[in-house]
Structures are given as structure tokens and as C-alpha cells.
Length: 604
Image (cartoon, rainbow, N blue to C red):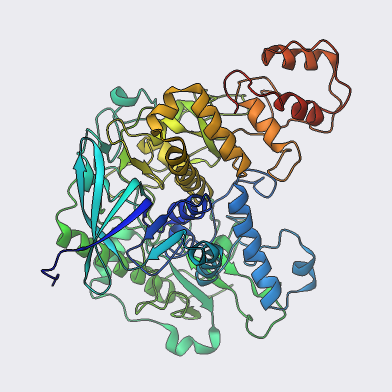
């Protein structure tokens, strides 16, 4: 029961709702500008899909160790590696590897235990909390918004002690994985959309013929297991009461996508999202592999929690509860019915598989939050379309073709790269896994058409259902959140709105310079990472649309001597009158040009 007293009023510069990966990154970035920031979260976890949702094997592209993330995201990744190096004795091979992957999983160059990720995020935020710039309120849920003249004036939230608070802020960032603020402050169709847009709505070659609000990617409750033959007699869990129905619904299986077998083949299920590999350690505390299970077997096909036909809050709670049972059913199937790969074995099931209840400290051993792949998405000034990022459509018709990058977006506030990955749901949509070209995150996709002080900071930007399949991954969500936090702080300092930035070249250039100075890449050059001396110069010059490299690769070639012809092309593109040729490397030439006060209106 809520108190009859008036709610306590809190005032901040920026309110971030949801401590997802994007929300945590937004808090890190916004509070670092000395803005007064409040981060609220329904659970007691930071990190979203990185931690509480059990996907602590971030989905990153093949060259991610060199390029593709923000400086803060790389700091998070390095802190993960430092934790295991400092707290455990590693094998000689693992200790010598600068890109040590604790789990040696094949889906990601990095893996870790969810609690380790959560602890590191707490450590990263702690100095900001200590300085008074950041307040974090856990177990706090927003229940309503006051909107006047297309502006969110305040939000009301319930706290862990059942008290009610009201929070006012100049900017509200929605970093919930489902875009939970949108139904509270806007209208479906006008301010946000859910499901798959039709081809008429987007012009995308692989959009369905008609709008499908029921085509929402499935969510998943991951769990973590270890190989424990010595406890086989006690490992097997009790089956869900409706196990046979769940087995028919879920069609439990091992092989899906690239997975070649449980333990066999080049890409085994066991190694897919392995969090810790015992062979990396010579430490008595880690003698067994532990593996996170987030596969087609426990993607839930029996309903969703946004989109068409989800029902009321009670129906959503029932859907979530049954999805947890579906994951437990998959574990029971693995332990009792999964075909074995042993030579000459006629048995089924692997009772050697043990559920690790301590990983999440939940009663059933499952992740405390479902892994969410798709959110409500804002209606924005500029949507991101399939044909702008994919190499070819689902039928093989070229879109970006041989171009090394996706369509150039001069309002870029970040970058990302992952395949367009659509998991099949229970409403007839087929799966898809289509290559994309490295892409940018446009500011226009972050600015609602109506709401003036709302910014998305998670999966709720203006992707389509299709492009969400590429933009929803860990490092991209982090970049979205970090850039949203800095954009809100920039608006406060400049006394402007996001829409004004989008419409003003000088303001846009100033914001983009701020992002670059914070170690956020806005353009793709794999050989000029954020710690390179020419990083800021190359990033700023690229925003002009200048031809700084080849259209068929992602390299700038910073150490190559610049030719007289290329130098004159760059000078001309910058609109500068420099007669003498430059003698030096391409990186040095970029630094010299970027030192001019303004280049094509794109730089500060």
C-alpha cells in the first residue's frame, strides 16, 4: 500500500530510467560532466544484458579488440581481464595473452561471470556517486509521467520501501530494455511503434507486406551450468508441471545456426557462451567450465511482453513466469532426454550437467531479468533502414555490396557493427542472419518527433524491427547510452534542445567534437583506435564526408606518407587556402588540418 502523504520531490539535471548496459553507460558519461544525475533501476543489478540478463559474453565483431567500442567500454573490458589476472592464478598461456578470454567462448572475444561485471560497473560509478554528481536508486519503478506541452515535467516512482517519490529533471533518458517510459508519456503510433513495420512504411526490401505488431523477437531467461559427473545422482532437477507441453512448444534442441553439436564439431554448444574455461586457470577455485545457456532451446515461443496480444499486467507476469519454466524445461531435457554423443552410447540425457544456483542467487537459478532483444522504438526525425546497412537483402540483392561501410551519416554520434540477426518467434516470423557493413548511430534516430526532453538510451532508438536486429547488441547499446548521456549534458550547457542540435551545423559539430574527445568513434577507421594520437583529428575530418581512405576497406593507413595529390584533395575539401605541400604521414597531416577552427561546419 502506498502512503497517503504527498510524494517526496527530488530534482536533478538528468534522470536516467533503467540501469541497462545503455543506462549504466549514460550515467557514467553524463555524471562525468558534473551534471546532477539520477539513475533508477527496478532491480538491484547494474548492466542489463551484460550482467542481470545473463549474456556476459558480449556479442562483438571479429576485429573488436582493435576498434569498434567507446573508450569507456574498452575500460570496462580491460577491468574484466584485470580482475581475473589479479584474483586468480592463470595458466601460462592465458597469462601471456593480452586478449585473454576467461571462457574461451567462440561467440565473443570476452566472457565473464555476471557478478564480476556488476561489481566492475559499481566500481566505475563509485567515484561519481562519491562526488555527489550521481545518485543511484535501486528497486525503484516509474509508474507515471506528467507531460505538458510535449515535455516530461516529472515522473512518479515507487521505491523499495513502498514509498512514493516524484522526480523532476530537465532531461529524461529512457534506458529500460523495453522502452517502458513510452506508454507512460506518449501514444503508440504517434510517439512509438512495436513489432515489424510493413514494406510500405519503411521501403525495406525484407519488411513484411503488412504491419505485424506481433513480430517481436523472443526473450530468453538464461541459466548457467557446469560439468559435474561426481554429483550426477543429485543434479537432475524436477521437471516443470507442464513439461510435455513446453517441450512441444519449444522443440528443445542443440543444433541451431552455427552450432555443430553439444561437444562436437568446430562450434560446439558447450563452448558457445562459456563464461569460464577451466584450462585457463591453475587455481583450485576454478576447476570446471561454467557455461551460460542462451540458445534457441530457451528462447521463449509462447508469447511476448510487448506487441500484439500481450494482455494486461497479470498476463505479462504469467508469460514471464512460464518463460522461466520453459528454460527449466530445457535444462531438464538436457539432463534426461538430450541425445548423447558418447561412442556406442544408447542412453539419453546428461545428468552430469549441474545448474549453478550461485551465479545469480535466484531461487530457480535463472537470470533475474529476461534477455530482451527488442524494445518499443521511438518515432524519430530519422529512422535507420535495412538497405542502409546490409550487404545484400535476404534474397541476395546487393544493398551496400562491395562498399566497406554502411551509408554515411553526417549526424553520427557513434558506431556499431553486428549482423542483422532475427530470432524466430512464435508468430511465424522466420529467422535471419544477414551480414551488414560497419554502421553509424545517427543523432536523428535519437530525437523523438514530439517529446522535447526525452532521449532513448537503450534499444528504443528509431531502428526498424529489422535494423534493431543489428543495433541491439551490447557494445552498440552501450554507445547509444553513453552518447545519449553526453547529448543531454551538452544540451544543458548550451541551453539548447536535441532537435536544435540536429538542425544547426555548428551545434552538431560542437556535440560531435565533445563525443570524439570522450573517446567515442563516429566513423570507421580500424587502424586509428581511440588511443591513437590522430584519433580526434581523423574522426573530425571524416565527419565532413571527406574521402580519407578507401571505400573498399576500413583503413586510414596513418603511418603511410601522404602524397602531394592526397594532401591537395584534403586541403580543398576543407575549403582552406594552403599553398605549400605537407611532408609527413597521413596521421600527421590529419592532425594539422584538424587544428583549423572549422571544417565544412562539422567541427568545433
